Amino acid sequence: MSRRKKGLDISGWLILDKPVGVTSTHAVSKARWMYQAKKAGHAGTLDPLASGVLPIAFGEATKTVPFVMDGRKVYRFEVLWGVETDTDDAEGTPVATSDIRPTREAIMAALPAFLGEIEQVPPKFSALKIDGERAYDLAREGAEVTLEPRVITVHRLELVETPAPDRAVFEAECGKGTYVRALARDLGRALGTRGHVSALRRTAVGGFSEKDAISLDELERLRQGAAGEQGLADALLPVETALDDIPALAVNRAEAARLLNGQPVLLRGRDAPTFRGPVSVTTEGALIALGEIDRGELHPRRVFHLDRP
Image 1 (tube, one colour):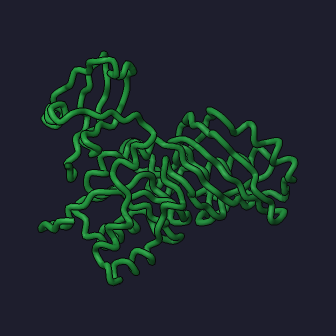
Image 2: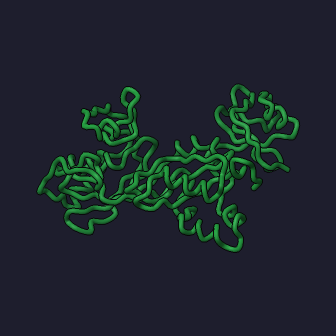
Image 3: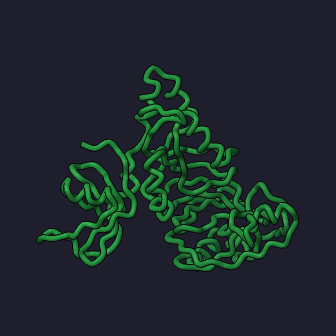
């Protein structure tokens, strides 16, 4: 890591285990301060109530954030039956109640309706914009907030346990744009009762999971430890880790030079790929670009300025 006036010129992914009670923005700011990083971003906001996997991109890794954002996400969450809140989680004000407590059998019977491509109305306390204003800002001001239903994809929704008659724990694997709080709300209504999320943990985002995650406390210990700056650097994952789900293509140095200058490369020979779409491009094992193959040509979309052989 080389120091510059505005911070460290560092690139890589930090998979943070965000604690409950901290906003994603604050968590990213804290991690960025620890690393003294010049540039940082994150892939997928977690509500303050939620804990778990928050991928943070430093430097050149910010160019790969969309690939992580588009990946599947896995959540474990608890629903409290009998109360629906205006935020659809435990931080909100109750807006409806019910004495009905669904049985395990009733819950299992309701789950198939929430699988696949379904329509979902996002919570009115969300970051979505209405006429340029955040929905949660309008809701806090007491304005009437109406959000249109959106098509989302739920790949998996499983009942994990029912620790009490008024509580159920689920695990969901879902696509981009899914609100777990809205799943809980809609499940409650479908079961003839009401419900809200009382606990939420994200266990995976794209190719990143809990096993990759490190807490803010652990980072602080690394920062103050004997290894210091190197200890923090060792906690980072390579930029290309975010690109594991797209094809990789190796090019020679001459082709790499063209791509780094923004010029396309014509792919020839028996081993030339015939598909179309995004690829991660390497030369001699080093990531140099994100490209797109179209009609036998490789076009650079984003280039990386990383240490190369």
